[in-house]
Length: 266
Image 1 (cartoon, rainbow, N blue to C red):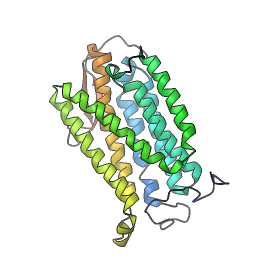
Image 2 (tube, rainbow, N blue to C red):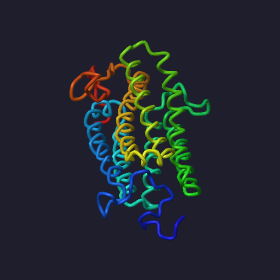
Image 3 (tube, helix red, strand yellow):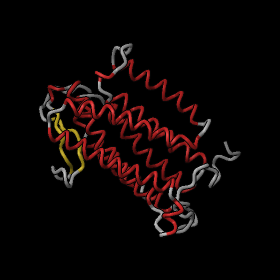
Image 4 (cartoon, rainbow, N blue to C red):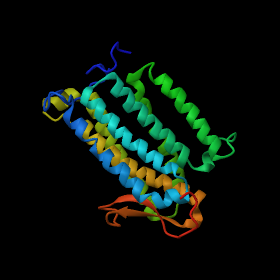
């Protein structure tokens, strides 16, 4: 840990974008401003998913609140390249994943010693707390570890899709996977081949990653919300809709409740 965690450029990681090129106050300009997509997507999904959250659990809103904070901390990190910004960015991502697991991880895949979702959530909280402490040991590997968790999410997604007969959901899973492949390719390319991108004066792949991973999360979270609703509240007849137009080609997906039932939480 550096002596001054608030100091600019005290982070161990510096992305490919040229520092302070567009502003004397913002280290990585495009990597900073591209986080605006999180500020838009988080509140929007809270609004669209409110009927589902009322039927299922208001913790759904906590996931999207934390998702918005990811954008805030990421913007601070890229603006200052400080050690504190790096840790806030990576730990907020860790806790979004932990919250998502707690809320949406399908019950059939719980370990045998877990009896209910409350126990599962407690286990995830303990693991996330331990991981938070370990993150300070070697911060530079945190981002790689967080991306590796994606493979477990993909594993569960594939198992669920193999059982699903709804073509719309299968298409949604395919789009989520394609978006993730493109997004992670941008992240890795910016990290590993920076010298090449600088030679052609195009060092903005990490900012593109921000936009693509934000959209990927919208797709994948909607997918897992659907799986969850099928197990937990099938009587509400959940369906995937798209905003602002109910079209897979121009809209953002969200889970809609199509059958009105007595309100559970609000």
